[in-house]
Length: 454
Image (cartoon, rainbow, N blue to C red; front, side):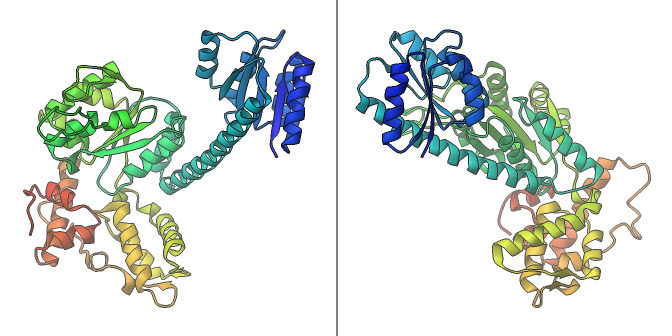
C-alpha cells in the first residue's frame, strides 16, 4: 500500500483519482486546497504525488520543485488540461516522472500509477544500497586517530559534496582508492558511476582510447565504437590513478578536457559535453615530476586545487592498534576466523614495524596471522617473516647523515629495506612484492628496474 497525495483545485478530479487509488489498495490523501499542499507533503511524506500544473496560490511546479529539492524519493506525476510541449519539457527537466493531459482514461492513469510506484520502489532500494556503500567506505577509510589523519577526515567532510578537483598523493598501500570511494559516496554524485582508470596498468597506446573513447574505423583495430571512461563517468566521478605515469602528450589532452569540459573521441570531429568530477592520485610526489619535466606544471595546478597527502603508516604508528582491531573484525566477518585476543608481544612488534607496504601490507599480514592462529589468540609466531625479522636499519649505518634531505632519506631507507627483503627472498621479485604488500609494478618502479620476470 502506497501513500498517494492527490492535489488539484478541481474537487471532482481529486475524488475520481482517490477512488481509483482506493480500489487498488493504496492510501490516497485528497487535497483540493493547494495552499496547504506543501504542509501536507512534508507531514505525510508520500511515495507518489499526483498534482495539477495550473492551480492558484500554489502551482504544480512549486510542488515539483519542493519534491526534487527536499524529497528525492517522492515521485511526481503532473496532470493538466492545458498541455504544451514547453510545459512538458520543463516538467521533465525538473524531475517529474510523467505528464498526463486531461481528459485521460482511467486505464491510462492506473498504468501510470503502477509504473511510477515501481520506479519509486527502485529509487528507495537504490538509496538504501548507496547509503550502505557510503557508510561502508566512510568508516573503512576513516580508521585512525592520529592528528594527520584527523586533518584529512575534516578536509573530506568539507569537500565531499563539491565538484572541486582533488589530487591524492601517498605511497602505495596507504588507502588512496578508499579515500576516493569515501569522497564519491558522500557526494551528490553518488547516484552516478564511479569509474577508475590506472595509468600504469594500461599501455600508452591504449590509454587515450580508454579515457576518451574512439569511433569505429579510427584505427586498424577499432572495429566498433568505444565509450571512454570520461563519458562512462558522466555526472559521476572519474578516478585517474597513478597519473604520474601518464605520457606528456595525453597530459595535454587531459588539461584541455578539464578546462573546456568536453571530450572528442579518437577519430571523431564531434565534441561531447561532460560533467565529471576528477580525482587523481599518484604514488610519487608530482612536484618532483614537474621539476624534472615529466609532468606538466599547468596540469598539476589544475588537478591540485585540493591536494591531499596521505601519510605512510610508519609516520602514524599510533594508529596501528586501531587498524589491527578493525582488520581482525573485518577478517572474522569474511572468513569466520575470529581473534579474541592479540598477544602483547605481537602487538608491540606490529607497532614497531615500519610497514613499507603501508596499510595494505598490515591487512595482508593480519590475514595470514588470523589464518595461522589455532585458538583465537594472535601470537608473535603467527606474524609474517618480514615483520619478525626486520632489523633496525638505522643502527650502525654511516650513510644516514644529519642534514640529509628528508625526502631523499625516506627514499633511500625504503629502497634499502626493499633490497634486504629481496635478498631474503633469494631475488624473487614476485615473493618480495607479495611480502611487502605492494604490486610488482610498484616494486620495479621503486627499484628503478625494467619490468621483466625474475
